[in-house]
Figure 1: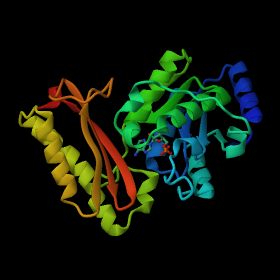
Figure 2 (figure 1 turned 180 degrees about the vertical axis):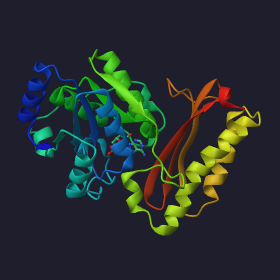
Figure 3 (figure 1 turned 30 degrees about the horizontal axis):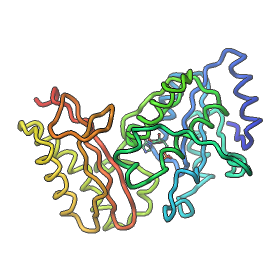
Length: 285
Ligand code: AMP
């Protein structure tokens, strides 16, 4: 496994691989790898000859007062984990390499960021779209793998790829959870044991929504009210949003459709956690 820090070396490597007829999968990450990330890597490995991952805590997707400086890092552990799933190349640039002086270009997806996380994190998805576009140009993948846990991010990237005619297949991988249901996240490491218990309210509330759907409930407000009060019954929780929305446009719905996205963002103590689930009427029974 090679670790590459410069854009030029990474582009040359990818060009060589492509010239040799090898297909490339990219898994972009911010490091502090967990089983969720590794699942994305396994999927990438399955669908391509060469697996590149990037580890880069992208400063432009963090707002003022967000956790860019205290974002957890563990390079040594990350490299071990990457090696264990057969990663071929780790691209690990510095912030200066990615954003040199006079950098001034931004990729902006117009509508999708005006919902869910985009409302409380203005500019976040511009930062995400821009860095992912750069990573695509640097690693030149045929396929890029993203987690469905960050549903809105996956939607924004898919839109960008379609709108800008990027010749890259986007693969979404289902959310990997801890045995008790908590969605894996690098940010879970911030939680105290008491907060960790309260964080279970997110998955429990998703289960409750599915249960209400099974019993025939279709009114969005009834479901979001039930989800909210279950979450808030756990200490240290503060809801950013609980939304039922169209899975494609992310617009809020009053009543459930064939497929409806339930999306949650909850602060547990100081840690902001997200989770989501596609509610399907067809899976009622
Ligand atoms: P991050 O390092 O948090 O930026 O995440 C890198 C990639 O891993 C993104 O595509 C995330 O959606 C994905 N990811 C993070 N947590 C999980 C999880 N629990 N299950 C599946 N994918 C995940």
